[in-house]
Image (cartoon, rainbow, N blue to C red):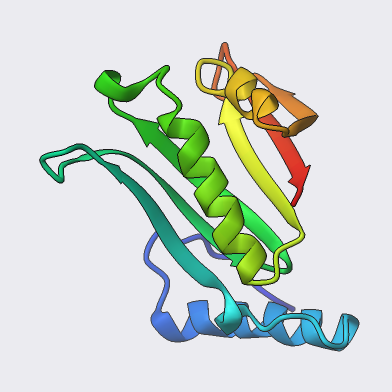
Length: 142
C-alpha cells in the first residue's frame, strides 16, 4: 500500500532523498559518469565602456555538455556581434572543462536563427510551449 501527495514546499530531507536516489541510480547504470557535484555553473558577461552589463550567458557544464540556460542582450548591443562573442567564449570555457557538446533551448520569438548561424543544429520542436508558440532544441559539437 502507498499514498501519493503533491506539495509545493517539500522538506529538504525529502528533496535530498530524491536527488540522491537518481544520482545513485545513474552512477550504478553508467560507471564513470560525472558526478552531479562536478557540474560547473558559470556566467559570461559583456560590459560596455562604463563597465555596465549589456548582455550575458548563464550556463553549466556537466555530462560532457555545455548547457546554455539563457542568453540576454540589451537593445543597445543587438546585431553587433556581442551575442556571437558571448557564445564563442562560453564554448571555449566549456571545452576547457571537457565538454564535447552544447545544448540550448530557445523559443519561437527568441533566438533559433541566431543559434543556427552560430553552428547549432535544430534537433526538435515542441509546439504549443508556451501556448501559441514553440520551444526549439538545438545542439552543437564543440
